[in-house]
Image (cartoon, rainbow, N blue to C red; front, side):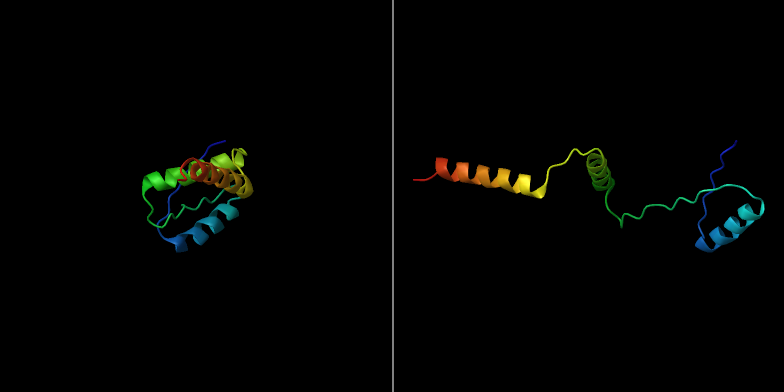
Length: 82
């Protein structure tokens, strides 16, 4: 088995290529480029890392985070009241 990677600039050519590959009875996959809307590379990397954390269940619920922050704020206020 061999793998071939083809990059197409014109979306219209994709349907022609698919038809040709189908006619030749070849298996293929189409991967679309991700459009990040002009975000800087470091932001994209951060989002991807967050998605990996989500997939690996390395996350906390909204309720857990809000309860922890409420406790921190309450503790801070109690220490800093006159």
